Image (cartoon, rainbow, N blue to C red):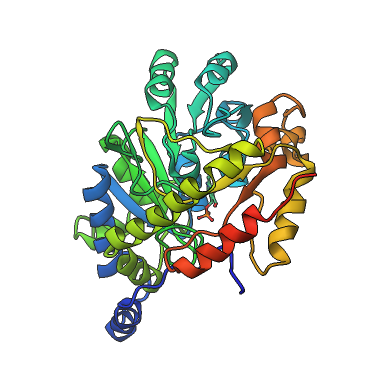
Length: 377
Ligand SMILES: Cc1ncc(COP(=O)(O)O)c(C=O)c1O
């Protein structure tokens, strides 16, 4: 059997929606399908405004622009995250401050965060890893105390909750990813959710190359012009239509992903405890998204061995992020190897199992057999 790590979800209605876009004559951004996706995201997350972007990376860049980061200001983020969480702010001159994560969720540790806040701190970027909420009560309390902006990197967490509130509604801004590996996808894509009304107009300008084109489209000005910084941060209508077809199937996609996640969890319980494997913990406050199922091997030497064992049986499993504080660029920016031990250990021991909504029970039987057939020496 050949089992990939991921299969992008393509809804049955995707082709007919894409045909409608092709026939409509509107392929660029901000058309009917983009607007429908934004309305869906605004309704589901309760944000002031949603903007579709070409990626989560682009939405993070828009966030850094909205925060008006100036060189030397500090942005606090988990050491265990994707490079874009840091790069978007680094490109604006910010200094990334790498914070260690909690061992049970691999999310930003509020205790480590509190120790790293300085007078130069400007922004906190909690990442809801695997679609499991960070401890947002503690994080937002620190942000309020020190007057910091909160940008939720919610690349994994559309449909997740914290204390029953949607992820993406808890910070000043939030970003989403619709990359093909995500639960809801359109190839490459993302969104910025703006929760501050006073930032909505500027977000619109930044997204449209620094122009007031949206005012022109509404007939509020007779020509549009250059009014601010900005870039090309719109998603085209074809990917927007793909995304809309997935969003419409939210219930069934999530139901199936949770079934698969739950089965991994139940059937691997005793094997994990017999072999000292650390599993992700879902705190009571988190409604997770079944985005990832990962195991943390008891020792570093088992990570690649276990991946290889599965590969020999046709199954693709994979490691995840390298701790940013010990990457070459992280070190250049002040990161210190050894300073975020939980993140560094996760980078060296984590194995993510295949998880996609189209996975059959037979495929999962085969994966589970292969997993429990691995022997620790
Ligand atoms: C936490 C996190 N943030 C941001 C990104 C970047 O997403 P995109 O590929 O949509 O730019 C990723 C990518 O998977 C991610 O894991």
